[in-house]
Every structure is written in structure tokens, then in C-alpha cells.
Amino acid sequence: MPGNEGGGENPPTLKRSKNDIQGNTDDGGGGEQLNNGYLPYFKPDYKRLYPENSGKVEFKVFVEQVDPKGKLGNKSPIFLNHIFTTDIKGVTAIQRVNANKIAVVFKQYNTANNFLNNTAFLTKYNMKAYIPATQIEKTGIIRFVPANISNKDLYTKLSSIYEIIAVRRFTKKVGQERVPLQTVSITFLSHVLPDNVQYDLFSYRVFEYVPPLLQCFKCFKFNHAAKVCNGKQRCSICSGEHFYKECDKPNDLCCANCSGPHLAISKQCPIKLKKITEKKTNITYASKAETRKVEFPTLLDQTVRLPEKASKSKSQPQKNVPSTATPAETPKFDIKKELLQNADLMNALVSTLIELANKTDSNPITSSSIKDMLIKNIK
Ligand SMILES: [Zn+2]
Ligand SMILES: [Zn+2]
Ligand SMILES: [Zn+2]
Image 1 (tube, helix red, strand yellow):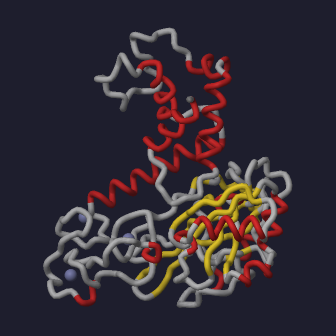
Image 2 (image 1 turned 180 degrees about the vertical axis):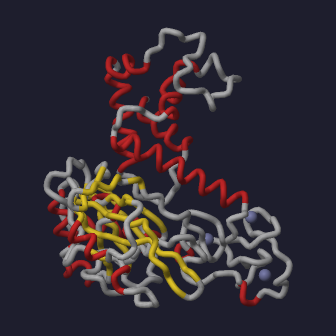
Image 3 (image 1 turned 60 degrees about the vertical axis):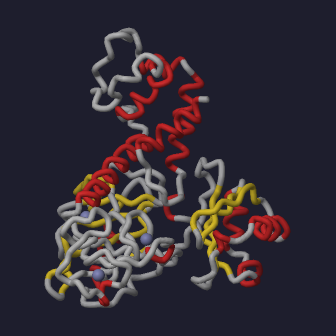
């Protein structure tokens, strides 16, 4: 009934090995009823390292305590500053990511890579360090891939302009079994996705991968995991402050998020549906901006006009203005021209895009957060 185990009753589950930070070699792991050919396949001996010519200006390494109870993100800055200036070279900043995690920022790719191998330091403080996947990898999906081709075969056969480092087949739970689907996720060693991957002569179009919405299995709110949850334990059935197995009102459905008559994990929940839509929209915006297909999303389009129009059009709705409809009072405003001629504006946009692309915290990207970023960069 209330599917509280593991990742919940997700639809086609992409078997992501989130914690499998350095990327397991070979197709081991997982187990369960799934035929080996459908377990995630990783490039053998792959280890995440910063490449030499990434064009990045900073190099982030995430650091956690090996003991899952050690809350490195909550440690005193005095302590963190001390150990990272005394023992480690080339650190330019330390940031809190969440209670468990900090990001240590390096100026050079090689000092960041060296730090990963600094076992003396890491053992001394009982820490583990890794490069977050989003810094150097990008995952896309391809569709209509016959289910009888194993992940390993795909890994061997597929080629692209960017190196492929992982292949994972989407699967679906049918009764007790996991059934392979025709959708496959491909992880590339790149910031951006290629348009296509080739299987011999056949070309698959690569689509953006939208990861499933993360819902906490402790408090049932969104975009954080139970292991970093600061909220109270809630019941997925009645929303009371207890674990669902201890629920004494199993017929009294009350969603912990919206108080509606459904389980807190239900897809009927209007709040959950809204979050899912938001996530899809934001990823589309971010990826368009990232790949710089020049068609800036309408969102940015409107934001750029903001400073100029702010005083006049306070009462006018800013949303839902089609990007092509130029407001009557500014018929001459040409965004392309403005962008090309106004170096400050262009720099602000580029900085915002870089900031978005390098974003590693778990806060969701929303239109208002992008707006804030842009306005901050314009000033
Ligand atoms: Zn929570
Ligand atoms: Zn309950
Ligand atoms: Zn609900």
C-alpha cells in the first residue's frame, strides 16, 4: 500500500547510483530480479576528474564526513578555514551545500584533482571528497531503443561527439518484476548534450533528461532527501507525526502537503503535480540557455526589459506576454540589437548562464531565482 520503501512507487525508474560517486566499474551492483544486461553500465575504471581544458573558472569538490552522522556542513567556519588553509593548497572558497556537505572551491583543475587523491588529509579528518556529477557530466535520453540490446552492448556500440561514460536502461515494475523499457539514459563527459548519438549508421536524437521529482520520505516535502531532512517525521497516510507503519487511522487519508484525501506520495496531489511541472519547465529553460541556441527563453526576454519598464508597468501583468508581442509603449526596443550593443547586458546574461550551469546546491531553479540572479548581475 503506501509504497514507502526505497525510492517509492516511481514510474519508469532510472536506476541512478547517486551515492556511487566515483562510478562503479562494470555492470555489478543492484542485484534484484533484473537481468544483468539491464543494470547500469559504466565506463570501466571511470573516475571523475576535471579535464584540462574545461573553460571553467573555478573547480568545485564536494566533501563529506565518512560517518553519515558527521555533519560537515554544520561545522564551524573557524575549523573549516583552519584545516583547508593549513593543509591544502589552492583553495579559494568553502561553501556549505547542506548539513552533510561542503563545497571546496579550487582555482586550478589540477589542485582540485590532487585534493581527491590526498588520502593523508582525507583519512586524518575521516572525510571523502568527490567532484559533483553536474560539474563535468550531462545526462540525456534516447528513445525507441529495442529492449533486447543490453546496456553494455549500447555502451560499446554507441558513439557521439562527447565521450559516453554511462548507459542506463529505464525499467518499470510490473508485479514483482522489473521490465526493461525502450528509453535509455546516456551520460556524457560534457556540460552540454550532443544532438545525436550513432548506433552504426542509425542516429538517435538525444533529449534532455528530467530526473524524477525528489520527495522526502520523512517529511514528504520536495527537493530534498530524508537523510538531510530537518523536518518532522510525518505519516504518508494521515499526515500525523509518526511513521506510516504505526498509523492508527489507515482509512483516514490526509496528504501531508495539501491535506487532500490521498497519500502524501500520490500523483494526484495538486502540490506534487505543480512541482513536477515546475521542474520540467525549469530544466527546459536551463538547458536552452546552456546550449546557447540563441533563442533565449521568453522568461529572460521579459526579465531584460524589467529595469527599464519597472516604473511604468507595475500594474501590468508581466507573465504570459508572448515573446513576439512587443508592448505598444516600446515599439522600438530590439532585444537582439540591445544585447549585441550593450556589453554590460551581455555580460550579465552570460554570468547568469554560467552561474546557472555551475549551480550545485539543491535549491530548485525557479523563474524568480533566475530573475534575481540576472538583476544582481546587471547591477
Ligand atoms: Zn524532509
Ligand atoms: Zn498516520
Ligand atoms: Zn496532496
